[in-house]
Image (cartoon, rainbow, N blue to C red; front, side):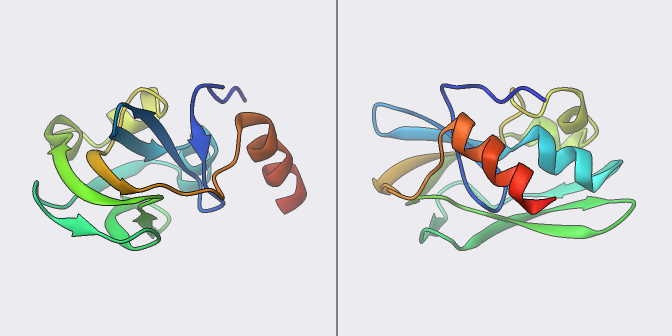
Length: 125
């Protein structure tokens, strides 16, 4: 499984791609593989504010419902509404299908590089 090296990852299996104070946030291919067939995605409204580590939405699959946690503190500036309408798209390419875009207020020094994330996944098994 390949994880983009330009992304940072959380131990809860979210990815973040930051650029000039804004970041797109999604879930890793590993998380999507573990979830199975995705049937529903619930995301916040634009303008909502979240503290690092808070749940900002859920992903429902045929197996379970999982919370998605924000890896930074910030305000939601954009929501991937196409993904809400077609949640199965998340399975096609989880590293291109972002969930939300946020204006970052506070970063996170505990994010993992792709190499560290791969090692973390290996330890989980």
